Length: 259
Image 1 (cartoon, rainbow, N blue to C red):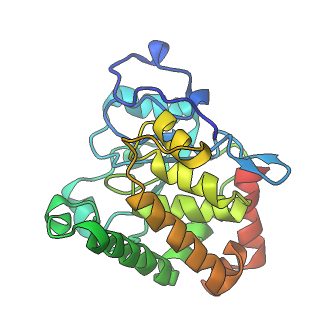
Image 2: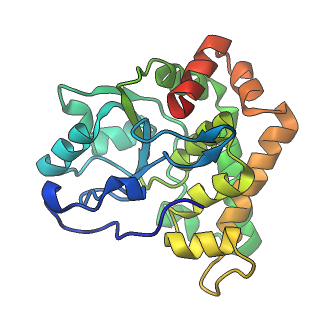
Image 3: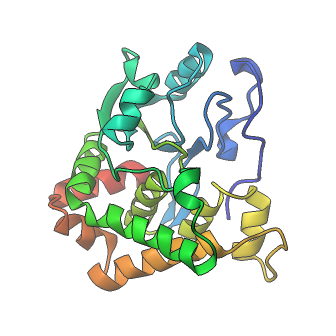
């Protein structure tokens, strides 16, 4: 486990925002904005201000744009479909200090209420698992994503996002953490923080007795997908190599998160 829970939706000025060392960045005009730093990996922990995950950045206020740029964001990877981008352009990507790239990871938002409406129980589990495996099967997109990550300099901080910051973003985060050497529990915890308060997710994943208000369904999905990836390829590095990435690119992406 790593970060205590703090409120995600706090209307605050830059000077009163919660300390981002807690993991969750206070960005009132977005959601699920979290730094991937501080996660245990072999030899230490992941670095802060290297990778940030989030939901859509299409409604960012000017103040929140300034906050993210001030935080160090310089690269913006948009995982949404061309149709989503056309409907709701990425506001941060327009900033002169930002290098923006759109790589559609999947042609739909799995958390679209209309798509989820007919899914219940095991059907919902299968629905998300199939969607996540489709993302991993889109190896050209994964190659482009990690090629972009590999260009990051030590002074760069990369933000990557989709619409809800849960599914497409969650799979990319899983790949980054797996590449860095994070274990399954910490990969699952990072995923769970998108759906549950940190203390609830931590108690369920790292504690002895899961809280009653914790639904393990979605966390079971990410665990299953993580295991499938490792069973099929042996390691995240081998998977990325199969996607067409050079060893130098894979190591550059890993090194940006781990130092």
